[in-house]
Amino acid sequence: MTYALDQAGVRTGIVKEGDMDQGRSLPRYVLITPARNEEAFIEKTLESMVHQTIVPVKWVIVNDGSTDATGSIVGRYAEKYDWIEAVNLPVRKERNFAAKVYAFNAGLEKLNQIEYEIIGNLDGDVSLDKDHFEFLLGKFKKDPRLGVAGTIFREEGYSSETDSFEGQKHVSGQCQIFRRQCFQEIGGYFANKAGGIDWIAVTTARMMGWKTQSFRERSFFHYRHLGTAERSVAAAMFSYGEKDYYLGGHPLWELFRVAYRMVKWPYLIGGLALGLGYGWAMLRREKRPISKELMEYHRREQMQKLRAVLKSVFTFKALDSFKVLPD
Image (cartoon, rainbow, N blue to C red; front, side, top):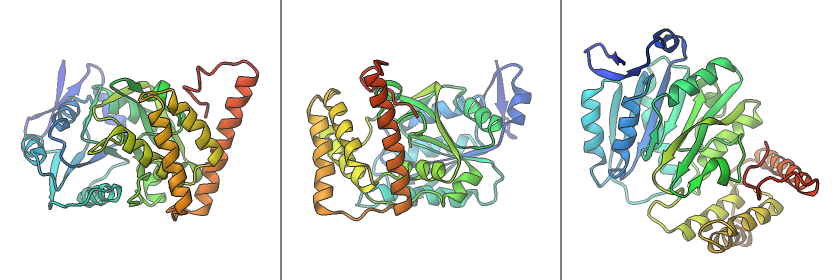
């Protein structure tokens, strides 16, 4: 086994025999990780990255006002690996989705003098296979129209490959990789306090003509269940329902999504909470943060998927209870 070394001779990652030339030919990439109170998991993410077959040119980890040991854990790795940079932001009281964008942008400022073709957001509570980024970089090299890429992810009792209601064109935000040109064209991440930041970025890219894909050949593990940071599963599902309304989701699509969630854990409760969240936001007539153009594009995609599902059902082509939707 061969190790990649930095200029100081410090091991930066594993390189498989015969892959040195391939690594040099792949596009250069950088990563940003906004991290807040991730002491339970962030070392798993750090270990995953230092053992990547191809490590990033720069990985900026932004300690977003953590009150636990996140900063000190990141600091140890930043001292050892010169391609890891730690940025510490002051402690803040509020927690919202826009704060993640502000932290990401603080990391982005550290990349102004660095040449790269690919930029990614990586959460601080995941574990990755050793060739995760080598695989994705190869996809970007092969397809110049690929704007956003990722893989499926797994949690305890959950897999986005079989349990997601989104389809293969959606790229989940825990590990979301952009072609730099695409990221610039969509204007980066939109700081929406209600959430949907990752979804807005991917859907906008697709609306602008870029390809987006979550590849099934690789996966990563997400340690914290989606949306459950500092709240219960039911509260998270209620919030997701509100977000579905904010992001312009079609009511008919939402009805099918609620029915689907009712047969998944937590049974009935998850679906009810999702529907109540959507209905509550609708009754309040909450202002949507997205453009009319993006909402119309989103609803067209939803109806296309729904028609495909219903056509398959009525022609007896089973879709395993809507586990996987066609794109």
